[in-house]
Length: 194
Image (cartoon, rainbow, N blue to C red; front, side, top):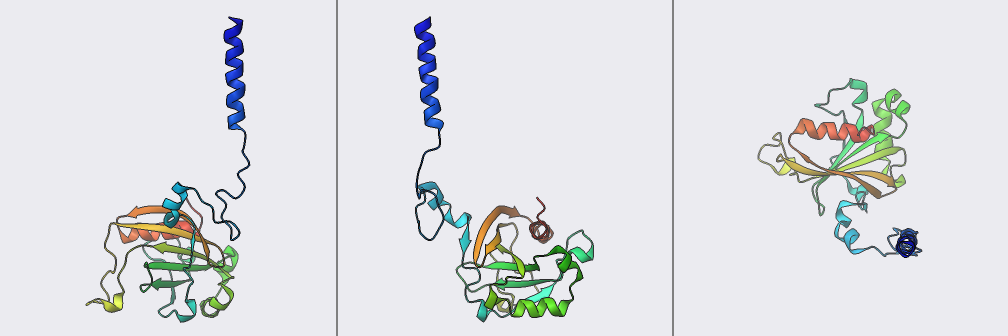
């Protein structure tokens, strides 16, 4: 019996050693100095953190300012926000910009929001909290009816939150069935509601 107990203690100690943190210098780090990622992370790279949404923001046209629509909330929670939709890159996306400070969001006038946004590209939009919603959509100007919906639902939406400059954290990937559901996802991201 004592041999059996000793064997169990030995196995237990051996398994505890395997659970101890191992020094894996550079493995799975995301930094400019280290490009090591494991195979499963490489496979999901497009679904995780990314960069490049602000590429060529000096050339953006078609930016707008407005309010979220189809969301059940008080009007002062719905904007004003600045919007940009990209149709010409490797993927289509909608970016929404809101002042970082919630108090400032509530008390700001539309002219100052728009002026700050128009000049924001040169400073990486530092005054704004930025979110990107990447999903397939068509350029309304290239549709027969420019007022027609430019998204075919259901659609898969990847949601990103800006970390700094043009580096983004993937928050979630969601299948969306209707415009109202998309607006709710955008509202929840802007206000950190899960």
